[in-house]
Amino acid sequence: MNNIINSVNLIYYSPTGTSRKIARAIGDGLKVNNLCESDITKENNNIESFPDDSLTVFVSPVYGGRIPSIFFERLGVLNANGAMCVIVAVYGNRHYDDALLELKNEMMKRGFRVAAAASFIGEHSFSRENMPVAAGRPDFYDLSMAEHFGKEIMDKIVTVPDFGELFVPGNYPYKEVKPKQPVAPISTENCCSCGLCISSCPTHAISLDALGNVCTDIDKCTLCCACVKVCPHGARVFDTPFTKFLYDNFSERRNPEFYF
Image (cartoon, rainbow, N blue to C red; front, side, top):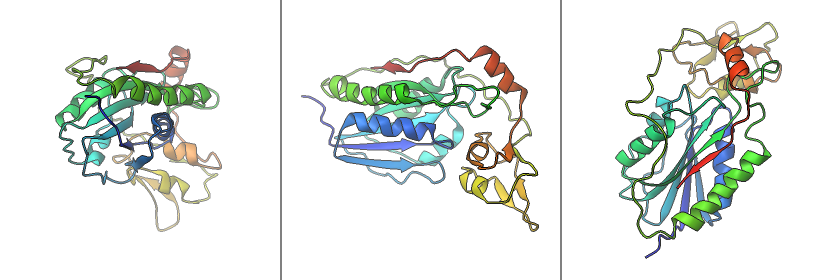
């Protein structure tokens, strides 16, 4: 008996929009009439039911070779009862390290059958104009590959009556999550207090004080740099020596990888 997919859930965490672009391109490739999106960047997941004939596509960015803890927090409590899912990690051209394995294991704990996996590249959060790291990605090629990945899922996975545990690269114990440094993006004198950085922050770390100045809670900041990328005046900046390290060592183009 073949697996039949009648509905698709796209669930993604995407502070700078790269994971959202990949998720939607995969959705285009799946070509189902009943497709629903759940953007958990700022809100918790509201999907509670996962029918047997549904497929859920989870797309997460990679921070330091791991899935950010906020991704799992925003998913809430899921009970898939054997429904199929696809897992996707979007990383900034260095490496995704243990992220795919972590995502696979966590989804299996929640009762999903992991049918396929992929890694894609998005512009690194720390990329700067003078030191670009995967600038402009996902580009046309990436999005075309993501759509192709969606087609491959339908062509190869749903026709398999029963599949074993999916292999994805990674190591367990996972790569250690290093303590976050007490730093965050700052607003320069060019800031006009338009509020776009505030509305873009997925952890609500940015606010205006009584004088109308932009303030950042360093403890809440995850260094996603959504505020930097959304600022229309370039008044929001984050300077770190790590950008030069990435630029010097990880500028060579990397390509998406698929696992079935």
